[in-house]
Image 1 (cartoon, one colour):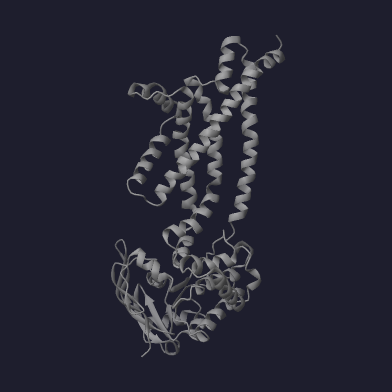
Image 2 (cartoon, rainbow over the protein chains, first blue to last red):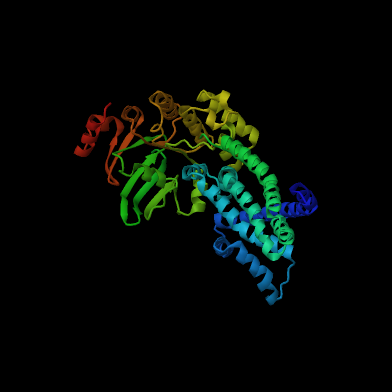
Length: 220
Length: 246
């Protein structure tokens, strides 16, 4: 069979893998942003107990590989009586990892708002909450956009590790096909194309977004 | 007797072990303009920042309008509405328009109606000649314009005391005059009580009713403005004035 035929035949399988990668990434990113924002707010407002818990979570999550986290969820949790299917494990793992990265991204943005801005806000009598709402958060969010964008791309690429818990996403699809038909060139080519279709447009959109928010917020 | 707006008694401040303000005592009466002068690092800015709680102090008492301040963040937050402060770095909020910068305090902190606050904000903008910029963003303004807006923002709260912390230090020479004129007018026409940290000796001489001369965190002398520049009491102040070109 010619390369072209191999590729054509594998298209339906790659399409399924593509959709799954996209879908898992989307849920993972949204979940990570929510978790990250919550952790970051707990830190910003120095919430007792919960703030500490969030800080511990961030350290654990950032300092362990996704691979290990997934093994833990997939193989160790059932021992304690929590059984999740592979896709749920993947999503939970991705959010567990991404949450801390997003939290750090938000923290970086909030910390990046200059001390003099905060003092000026205090000097006109703003409360801590008002200061956050009108001064620190609007500026901090725009400052955190580049970090958040980088994290999104990082998380999409991390979904390739789902292959170890047998989720039939893009990478798993390619590896499976190679294992069955020994046509690595064609399948690896398809794999690269699959990720490129997701990542290149996203990367362009995020770059434009970064430029826009930068223009919108700086120049005091 | 004139009403005492601020009184500072035995104020001591440390940064860790470094003693930066030593036994500071002074008071400012209503309508009085006090200039804090002294060499760099003498504690002028630190002192002025203690007066609205931006810097904590370890000992001593600050009385504002006859009320001794219990220095908690919550108390300071209430008192800051009555004390306007303008900084060297102007720090307009870049995410808000000029008008929204000015309205933030009156509307959100003092709960004035938006209409009333806007009307008085526009009046103040007229006075500093920047009414046409009310919908501009800070990045569209020059340094001098920003600093004038920052003064308007502080005045919009109807403060009983204004603190100016080296407000012309980062401006182009050309812009300095405009900003200083606004402050002078404020002293003369509105009879505003002010404490001014500045390196502009001409300006200080022109507006200060009284001068506090600081060095190494101590008040070396408190003299009437007119007298300080003619006949300072201490040799240190004399040397300081001689070194200044004015």
